Length: 111
Image 1: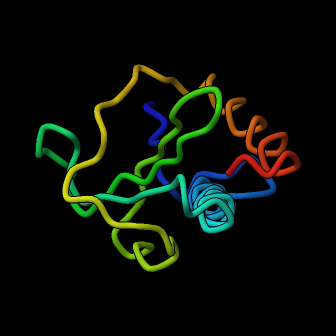
Image 2: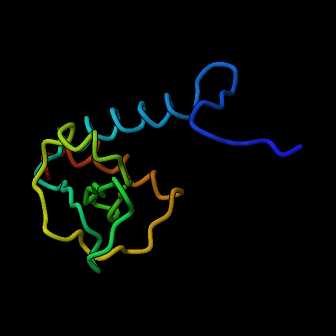
């Protein structure tokens, strides 16, 4: 028997869909509070994109961090729209820690 993993799969507390929605809300708050260094685009740097998705990113003192999000959440992000996203700098999900550097920057009024 093959287990099918989809958005309705749960860890007993939350479904994947709920967790992705939470991630979207939380990242939109971070980007909206730092809108001078955040952006969104319907296209990657090379002009491609995944169906019904956009990319949203933020430049932190430690480097870029981005997520793909569903088009239905486009208006959650009150940040500048770019024709094409900046070139991906190679960051991975492990680099989410870069977001912590925004706290120091906000405290020092660097952003």
